Structure formats: C-alpha cells, structure tokens
Length: 155
Image (tube, rainbow, N blue to C red; front, top):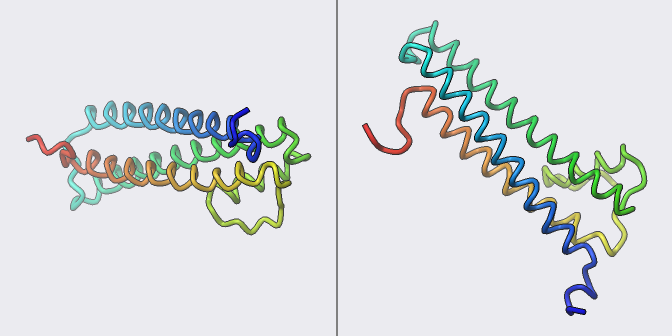
C-alpha cells in the first residue's frame, strides 16, 4: 500500500471528483459558447451605446451567467452525492449544504466531516476556486464576443 493511501482514503475519490467536475464545467462552457456564437451570427453588430442592442447584450450576458450558475449547482450536487455514497455525510440536506459551502469556500455551514474525509472536503474548496476562475475567464470572453470584440486578436 502506498504511504498516501494510509493517511487519505479519499484521495482516489477526490481526484475523480476534480476531473469529473472540470469535465462537466468545460462541456457546459463549450455548449454555452456554441449558443452564444449562434445567437451572435443571427444578430446585427451589437452596439452597446445603442439602447436596443444594449438590452440584447445584457440579456445574453445574464443568460451566460445563469448557465454558469447552473453548472456550479450541478457540480455541487456531484460532490454532495459522493459524500452521501461514501457515508461521509448522512442526509441529502447536509451533503448539499456542506458541498455548496465548500465549493464557494465560505466554510461556515457548521457541518464537519470525520477525519478520513476532511482532505476531500478541503479539496472541494480548491475545486470551487478553479471552477469559479474558469467561469470568470469565460464570462469575460463571452462579454468580448457579445460586444463584437475579437478575443483572439485577429481582425
């Protein structure tokens, strides 16, 4: 047995959950990006100084942000289901609250994991930071695309 397995039985699950949630997130972003591109292709050039197209821009950005929020919710559910499956938490309500609290790195739910699952719980916070960072970068990219800027630098 590897030395790390003796001190952290959750390591395998943690790596799996990190990979799965990043894959879910990136897949969702690819789908959202495709939707944005289809909408942009059907619209005239959006001029954010004109109130009519400004409202369209705002609506598109809100849709992107809501899509990202849904992705974060799904990822919290994935972690919560893992906590339940592993017996780290015993009720769906506790698992959901703990997961959301960990994912957003607030850490004040008052719910504690037993010693063997603590590293897994802490790692969910790191996963949240990574996923929110990806979301922030994508939201910035989406704004540039919606406002007619070319993020790649090409004309």
